[in-house]
Image (cartoon, rainbow, N blue to C red; front, side, top):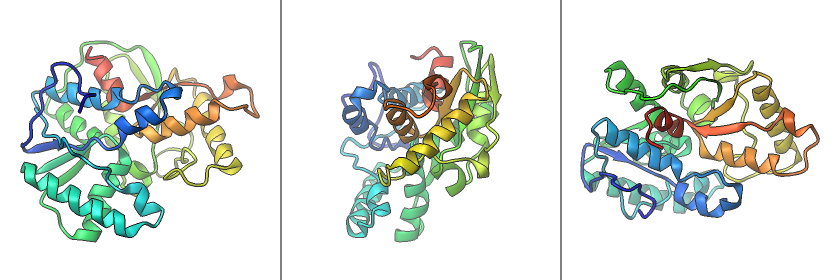
Length: 266
C-alpha cells in the first residue's frame, strides 16, 4: 500500500472496492521502461476521492490469477479466486472496480464460471466514470487540446464487449479529438502478447503493425485501458526495429491517468 498518493482516503470496508491488481509489481519489474505504471492506481484513487468516493481496498490483496488460468495452472488459479472472493466479501462491497481489463474479465467472468454467482458487481473503471458523466458528477478542470486514438484491449473489448464507455470518457474531456484506427472495437488488433506467452517474431510483427496503424491516424497520444498493452509496445519499440522508429513511436497513456490529468490531479 506504500504506492498510495499522499492524502488518499481509503477504507477497509465499504460499498465500492478498488481491486488494484499487479500494477505495483509491474512497476518494479519493468522499471527500465519508465512507464510510471503506479500513476494508474494513484490516478484511480485520486479521481474516486475527487468525486466523493472513499474506496475500500485490500491491504493483503493478491493477484487475480489471470496468468495462472491462461497458462493452465487451474489448481492455483482456483486457490487465488477463492481467497480473493472471500477477502472482497469481508469488506461488504457490492461493487468492485478495476482499471485492468485482465482483472475485470477474471473477476467478472472466470470467477463466476468457477464459483457461481458472486455477491458483488464487477465494473471496469471506464464504466464507473461513464456513469458519473451521465450523472454530471465528473468535472474536468483542464482543457487538453490534442488528438487521441484509443486501443481496444482484447480482454475489455472482444472478450467482454466494453467498447463505448472508454470512448465516452475520452471524448468528454475538453479539447480532445478522438480518432479511430481502421480496425477498432470488435475488429481491433491485439497488442501482440497474452499472459507473457508467445513473445516471438510473429507477435512482434503484430505489435509493429498495430503501432503503425495508430501512428497513421495522426494522433498525438495513444490511449489504452490495459497496462500490459503499454508494456508490450514499449518492449518492442525498445528493440532494433525493421521500420523507421518514427512510424511506430508514440506517446502512450492509460485512460485513468488521462482523466486525472484533465482534473488537475497529476
